[in-house]
Image 1 (spheres, rainbow, N blue to C red):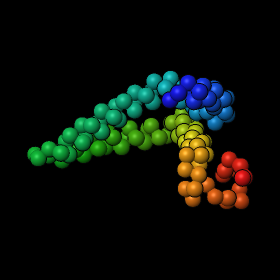
Image 2: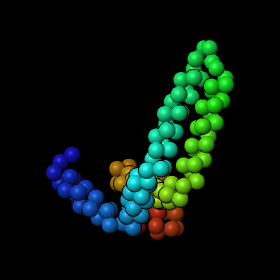
Image 3: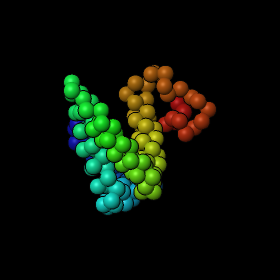
Length: 131
């Protein structure tokens, strides 16, 4: 990337940081990361999932052990998903993904202007302007 594009990207990135959706995500992510109970549950969940996958691939599978690990995985998942901080993060992440999708769509309309994806929908929020 040349210096001109890098400068534009830097300016765009700084402006993006001021978007309410980005601020909402940043705050939700910070609260989630600082919640040691949830992060510990997520870490354990990841380890238990790995163990479960390993056990399920064995030829001499121990179904009792697999069921025990699966029960623990399910309990951890339920605990994580019941967390208000996780719920808030998921909502904020979805909103951020929507914003990034809109940005990508707008950028792609410059790269591939006749892609058929950028036609007028009648909703002025779906494009970068009339030509």
